[in-house]
Image (cartoon, rainbow, N blue to C red; front, side):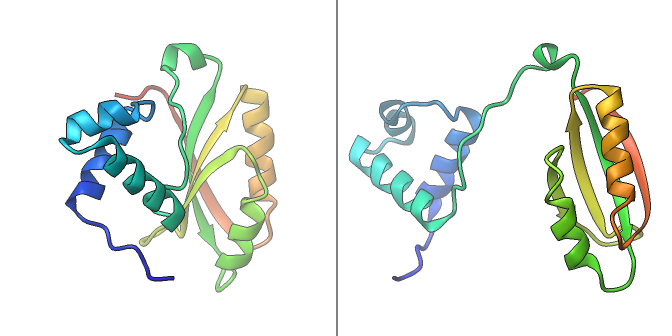
Length: 143
């Protein structure tokens, strides 16, 4: 199977889907000045090639008032990053995990339903073998 080569139409389609992931094929075709069949074919190829991993929903902050969100910076001991990542992936409240450079090795995005749950997740992360240090900041609002 040949790898799919992305072009400006693919980029434009992805940009439109980022704005409105629920846009219909007809709407996308109209916005991109192409046929519905072209949009459907491109969307199928982008999904099958792995360029689009899935579709999600973003909820307005006011609907998630009880949600506690935070960013955690993590320092990993020596060469244990792969093992630490594998263990952290098993914690469902860590919604994203990023490698980075600088003083911290990993950055985790956390989301819990309460401060008690948040405290439990912090303790669980700190118990992961290979984590030397961490610093967590609760996200108060998004702009």
